Image (cartoon, rainbow, N blue to C red; front, side, top):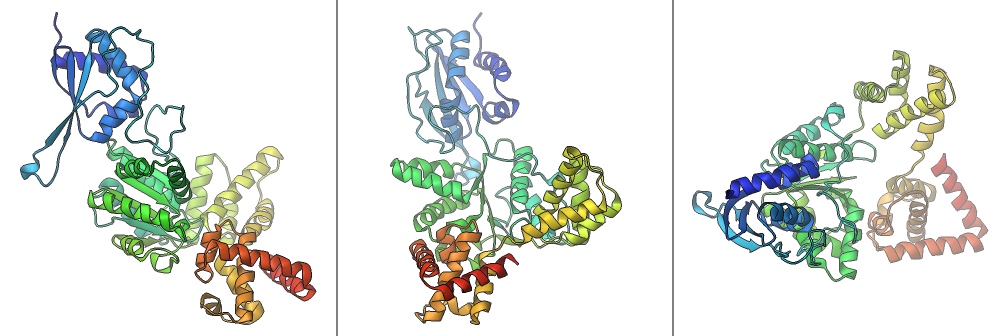
Length: 476
């Protein structure tokens, strides 16, 4: 009995569905439509070239085996990539035909023999060579969702905008959505929650979360391997790109230039961009103006320190999710005494749970007080570049603004160098970021400053005592 193209494809899907994860099946195979079967050539329709490329890269073995099982050893596969373009009247699609570049009709070769090695036209920079991923990984943490993101006055605008973007990515005025605020206020949680919401409501969308440092590393690798075009094209295929800590691009002009082109392509294609930063775009230094102007196109939503009611709600929700039982007075003590950021709230709860479980201690207000003194107060000593500049300038009795100016006055230069020295010592910021924040300098200037300060410490007792005194103030 001759099977129709629909029967053949449905039979293949029954097998494939049992082999790959449900989410992958829904993303990569449900959008595929069988068109015809002629002369043992099955033609299938896919909605984008990206899906065609991905099927060929990741699932060609499964397709080959299932098609040969249904049609025979001379089975062939052809794709029709049908993409709708707004420039065509009434959304009329245009069609591009692609034969399977991996040549499914391997007539005289055993079925278990791998396909001939062919490089995909666009490489995934997240895939380590030699290790094949079962499906596209959006790099999202399932714990960072909206259900455990507590709303308060500190985040209401950003959260509401995030819900709108997650429900209709690329279809709101919030593109790009820039979420900014100090460390530990929930920028990453909110950004990833948007990505998770997109995947729930639009499973066909390609979502990717990436930290700016990872993006930078991938770009450097692409330059070293001479495949910048693959790197660029990969990111231009994403439907929703979430870039965390965009301030890390400061001083990295080549990376900024590459991201500028990616940003333009995605924005013009109606794709969604979500960015996080530790300050508003207007305060970013050593960034290309054309890139900064694009950061301002959509919505800039800030996250503030949570108020008492929000802190209390966060503690209770976190304790409930982690199975930690606390009395109301302990919740209130923690909410009253941990005011800096959300990360400290979570760290205190984890420490209380560990003390109770591992050391057999009852969770009391006294134990909570001890945790706050040991953990939270220590965390508050984690200094920022801005704080370091203020302490150094107060010590030398000069205005902070002066070390941002282009002057060679000895006392200003020294204050600038000392600020760079302590920023490198007490923060995790890159040399380029430190230089950008302190006088708009490059990483080489920061290295020279650190070397100069170290040399003076070794040779000048007065200077060494000054450095020790400043360090005490920073640690105090």
